[in-house]
Image (cartoon, rainbow, N blue to C red; front, side, top):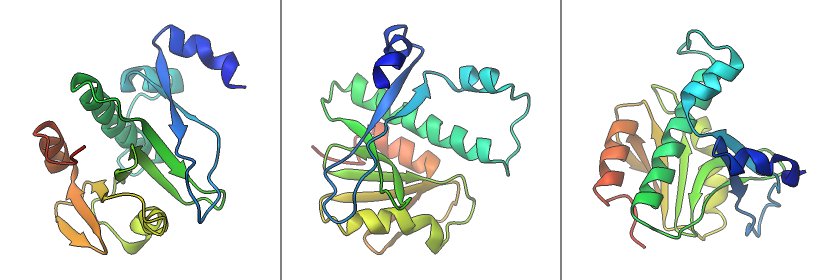
Amino acid sequence: MREHYSILEDTLVGFFLEPWTRSQKRKAAQTAKFYFFDLGVTHTLTGTKTLDRNSNLYGMSFEQFIGMELRAYLSYHRLKEPLSFWRSLHGYEVDFVIGDHTAIEVKATQRVSQHDMKGLKMLREEAVFKEYYLVSQDPIEIKKEGMTLIYWENFLKRLWEDQVFSI
């Protein structure tokens, strides 16, 4: 099925985010995610005129925005680290995984809850990654259960200052 979509990548309309499949404790999904290269393209194709803060599309857009920043960072720094995601067959998910060292969950919420950390907690059981981030719109930054819960602007500032992960 992926071969049918190669034209999308060849024309630079977007890119596939491959799944991280090295999971030992939970069987990982094998299907890649596709992201358009720009949020404006995504919104135009979906017919979005306004983006409601409480909509599912807002959360997906926020995730795509952070993903594009991660992809740009890796590219600009010429890091050959794979950017992928993890999803178990039971529905647990972590939005972005960089190499085998950093896991990043993105939530558009303004107040992080235990539920928001579920995917990262499940992935932590693999004992593979060094860093676990939950990037959100919650201004309170804390370390909790081996995870860094961080406001998105602070995360991006640290990312571009080379303070998020070390390879």
